[in-house]
Image (cartoon, rainbow over all chains, first blue to last red; front, top):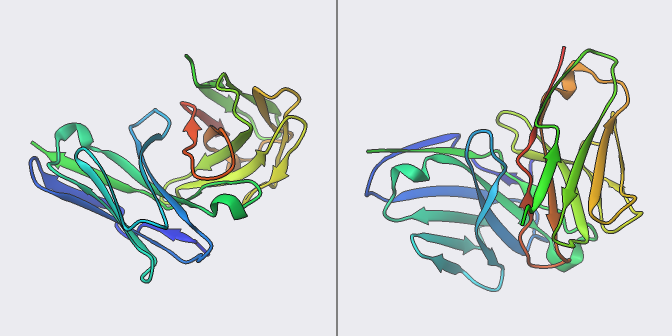
Length: 115
Length: 113
């Protein structure tokens, strides 16, 4: 059973428009959520995170929203740029309650931004 | 500052062969992890370590062993490779327990024929 799910395998948007990537989770112990970006033949790189005490975190063009009651988070990219084309992974951890502090990942969403 | 470095980047094995993947981090991180990435399945945790001399099983540990003899290194071993272990392997490290990000290596693409 996947504890973190990204139900959209791919997403295509026009340059300059908004990209919205979604993620759902089932484990109520998760209290820290991260988004990673991955280019082909490279390792994932950290993009933005949010703790469960917040419902929004913003960093430049990237904003993550957390809806704890729905166990849902989303990543907004505004405006989208061709260089944003990559696979985006949602990840979650149980913070201080998890002995290994490991991240649990979703399956990823491939974002394609068309010029 | 190299961050997390994985060796090798690519490898082709025959079924039944063994090999060791090396992960080295220069950030003095306590926690280290080995993940595998398969299409549509995201990254799944194989094994992890919370400090030098410690290891623990993750979500998909079967067929793998690990060792962390030095804080900066985390080794992943395949004793008898199987085609089902064809995957991209990523090592990651994290500074401390709590609300921090993990840093990943560039990956090792392994093909077992």
